[in-house]
Length: 517
Image (cartoon, rainbow, N blue to C red; front, side):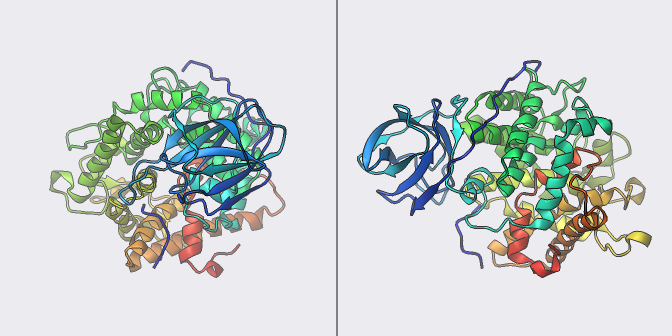
């Protein structure tokens, strides 16, 4: 049984990319809400101050903070830029993002100590304030992953079967001349489906390689420059909810303090709040992908400002999804997924109920994100249901050249005439990793309860294995190639932006000898 704390525009934006990134040395001294504890930081010189992302349950809003150098208190401007929502397990609200500016400016690589004590001063609450130009500081990458990705402390993310393919794919995406050579100009809208900036930021957090942080900002800046005042992605001729990629914008803010990214989040929310989260048989278009985009947009705005109206929107979307799943419309039987018609999903066909495993991976990740922020597993049964759906109905066995693959994710599942399913064992395996991530989340929710479902366990193991095998096959076939082509480029976003937890969950529960490194 696990024992850790984890409950779960036409406007052009010109954003400066860091040239200096993180501190050189840092140590943590039992910094978990205990009085008179301290955090040592070696600071590069900066006129703009520093942003410090903070893990959950570490520094609290009520803590009085002071900055010391050589044992003496020094003046500093300390502001709280983000807070965690108050969890049911705590009476104290924790800080997620701090801004620190020593007064006066310190010389380069000055060692300071951030201290909580009764004699410190209360921090200024300035949620979402603009601190453009601040430098990112952090004690360790484990600390940073906890703060940004909401990982539990000390988890092992060193899964080369996951990281090495992502690095090679990232090199292709980051090489603009190479992308153009393959007829993928940045102005091609479809590339920006799914959260490409988030995928690059995650790669930085996994590899500690600054080039991916720079690339993440480059991608974030381009995307942000294409979101107009109404939240419309201008590379599309009409407003399209599924192009709302807000999670990477929040991450960009946490890594930079630049509130221009939050302006984009606000615009995206204003667009996506027009999406009707409640599904009825008579409505028109509906997919899990659009529901996920609307949920992520509301989550992103709430995550920063913690306002009641955006939280209400988050809860309404999740409640509507639970209703579709556990109390399906049209007297359809329970199938462990948010049932809707093929006509709603595809824009053609009849009222046959369907669900899409890979689109549910997008939706499941947003629900997972909400639980992590709240440290509350109130919606764990929804994630378990999604995993059950994939395990029981969401895959099919390969044939002929693919006969060795016993589980290929379906594009979507028809609970009626099979004619609506278009199984393609050449393209469907491209969603193996993201669907594996969805099943992993359901498996984890059961593990927290001390339970195990054999069908889910089998799907988790096999899909993760096939995710790794795909990478290993490419590695063998193109062993000398440092760059792997991504077709289509948007695959980079869907494969990685929702799967940052897959490596550590797999490491914890699967026999890693079964996954070739």
